[in-house]
Image (tube, helix red, strand yellow):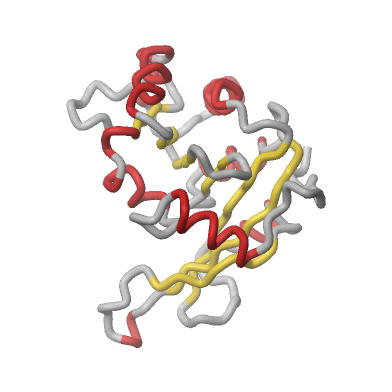
Amino acid sequence: MRYNNAVTSSHELNPPALTALWKQRWPECPPFAHRLRGQHPDRWVRFHSLPESKRYPDDESEYAIVLDRHYTVLSELDPGAVLLVVTSEWTEGPTLTPQIWPRRSEIAPSAWHWRTLLEHPEEEAECRIYRQLYAETILWRPGAIDVLLRAVADDELANVILAPTDLRWLYLPYDGGADVVLPTREQRDALKAQHRDWLSQQSSGL
């Protein structure tokens, strides 16, 4: 099933509204998925997507486990009827020419350009890489983002952010699992307790 069921509704956000909402909800950090856990360690938990913390699936049975774990947690978080999906590309300049992740436009063809961010502005101009963020809202149901989650699992897509349209929590899948940032420590602890077998054995939680 192709991931292209974009929704136009009162739930859909436009770029200025989404930027304003992000600054309200997550003012400490721009929408860089890998930075959010460091900004909110007391509200963050990481779940691994395969048994024994295996990084990449090798066959369809393991892809099924990966998808099941993602959808289980997302369903428990309960985004409501609509899910916000943010995907990324990298470019050498501020233009929108795809650079590193050409599959993004294949996986999320209906997404609209949200923001252009420079992750390391201190770098020399010729070394800078710009992150292009795209967003869309889709009808939420298990199975709605199979193609996206498989691409993330295969390291074909990165810096993906999933959230309800009010951004009250963030779900950040990566190749190997997902980081979740909750509104409160108590909610984080409750979700963590539900899936202890999916946690890292390292003290860092990574």
